[in-house]
Amino acid sequence: MPIRQLPDTMINQIAAGEVVERPASVVKELVENALDAGATRIEVATAGGGLGLIRVIDDGAGIAPDEMALAVGRHCTSKLDADINDIHTLGFRGEALPSIGSVARLSIRSRTADADTGSEIRVEGGVASPVKPAATNRGTTVEVRDLFYATPARLKFMKGPRAEAAAVTDVVKRIAMAFPSVRFTLSGSDRSTLELSPAIGDEAARKRIAQVLGDEFIDNALPVDAMREGVRLTGYISIPSYSRATAQQQYAFVNGRLIRDKLVAGAMRGAFADILPRDRHAVTALFFWLDPADVDVNVHPAKADVRFRDPGRVRGLIIGAVRETLAGAGIRASTSAASAMMDAFRPEGAAPQAPAAWRQPYSPPPGGFAEAGQALFEAGPVISAPVAEASDDTSLKDAPLGAARAQIHENYIVAQTADSLVIVDQHAAHERLVYEALKRGLESRPVAAQMLLIPEVIDMPEEDAERLATHSELFGRLGLGLERFGPGAIAVRETPAMLGDTDVAGLVRDLADEIAEHDTAETLRERLNKVAATMACHGSVRSGRRLKPDEMNALLREMEATPGSGTCNHGRPTYIELKLGDIERLFGRR
Image (cartoon, rainbow, N blue to C red; front, top):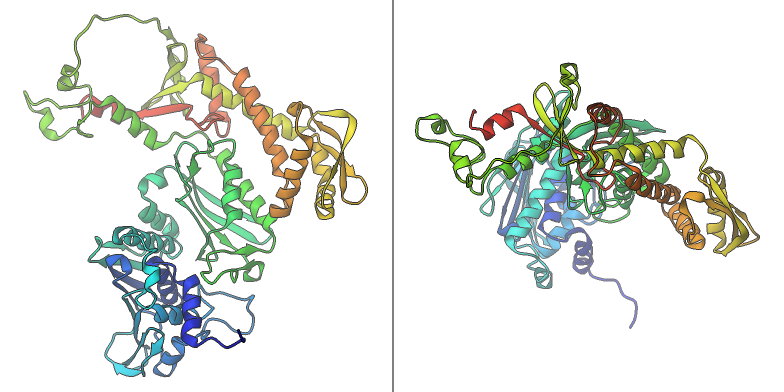
């Protein structure tokens, strides 16, 4: 078959396959165009999950009549000058509008601030109509109808209207997080109206994040602000005891651009590696600010994937900032843990809060520990259980974890603060304390090494051998002694004593792969930390051991002084705090 030029319509449809994956992709492109135009108010409306209708209205700069035809032309843009490395806008490729117009019925009405009237252009199946005058407000209104009508095969891959509508909501919320001063309204026949009011001032970012992720996240979040070699990182991370089953609620932005990046996701897993279990994920909203020349946003037409010029610097910044933030936060319990505890005390079907009517005579509450709640349980004989009582030292009540009052079931320490009740799992808490002490030992001095009787020579590609040799000094401090052994080979002479009998070749190849991908060598440190965690588990206070009052209080004080002690090495909470107000609600006093 001879080589021939594809028609423009087919070229646009091919591009649409990358840019327009689903209705949410269309909304993302149109909302980013509005933001690039300087909009302070953006309204999004959908029908049929966005497959029937998508309408985006903004109050931005608008499009001049003589530029309307160019706006729907391929690779026409006002956002890019001569230098593709100097990108300060969300869009720049000039592909979105022609791609959308090739698979849907597209109409654009726009008016600039200095124009008396607006103009309109329509595109159907890739064919544009002449520009004509139109009455419209300042700004731009874009309507997309019958998405994928020109490529019906794509419709088979769409989910139901409800799922597509949810995806649109998610993408609007994600973009809105980076632009707190802009008002976003999301409405339509397939959804309830969502309005994100503009936030201003020093707390603007925090207020917008609370609007999107909820006040509960803010109540359980820590602010991050760090700088390394020209890269600044700001935002919020959840405390370890507040986590999710998936990483869906991890948001990352580069210079205001919403991104999906394996390096950022991997760095977050590394930062929380010994704090959260593998099946739990932190909730994060992170914003990176750096020179546009140091990040490539032109990796994919959708512009969600990026490449950092120095990935090791960014990964190190994330891990260092997160760990420093957690270390400086002191000890905090998740507010959701207290809610779960409250729910556990309530009989099934009980109301979460006592109405005022409960306090009337002969109208007791249906749940909690008030009279009617108690009536749900059969009365039985009172059995006294042995309880280890602690000292009555009132001076400790002002401490974060308070004063130990008792030990129950030989595993749980009950403490009293000025305004709450604290229950501590003594084994989980001491396990974390021992583990952190072992980690400090690993970081403060070289790791003990064991010499191999016969050095193990590992053949590998020359580039991998060179990478390992470059990091040999770091490996030496971690107990792994290696050196070049001719072309394409590494000789390992020592291994960390903590690892015992280990697969040396597998470890070295894993390290080479990690350096190639992330320019770091954290795999060895993570393996050492895993061994330390196992040692801590077996060397900590066991369940079933009775503690003296002084021992209980000493454990509480050490928890308060140890970063990350709110969770054990496996990610489980080490303590739960129940506020006095919550307890009073359980008894119907509030």
